[in-house]
Image (cartoon, helix red, strand yellow):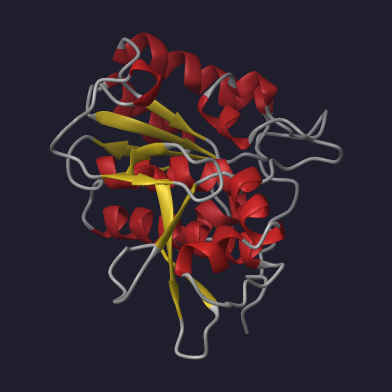
Length: 243
């Protein structure tokens, strides 16, 4: 047994979070490595050489690691962890998820549009329902309920990307609903979406709830009242911290 009474899966390596002290499967954490100049750099793929430090994929854990200078202790030397590191991680995770969805689309495993999404769900091929976090709540709720009924709870509902971000994955200005077939990219997209949801602050003024609610009730979305089933705007978001 692992900590907390969880049954330990010996086929999956576990890592210890430097911020919480808890051990969990590596896929639920973010690895950091040191750049040649001694700066802390996110290593989302976990492939960079050298000693690594692991932090749980949550905004609070990342903030704690930066503010309490826990990276210096983990790397056993003075290091530079920029205050904007949590934001940088969020940007990179979003880009990584968008790229994965784009690859699934090119492989014919993902479709967008309300009717195509509904057809994949009722046809029994959908494993993941992707919905824009800033789409109208009633439209998202209807498809989420359909997915729950058609998939007997086996279809994952993900709502951690905005309409503009989801649109990037499909080569358009915005997208509200999309479906991903089982197999192929489904597992990787679920894992990356969960990491992103942990570090992303949900949209909407004054929102303080944990971002992992994107996997829960879509009725708790943040669409503006009276907005048609679409995003608040069709602008493609810039990537903060990038050119």
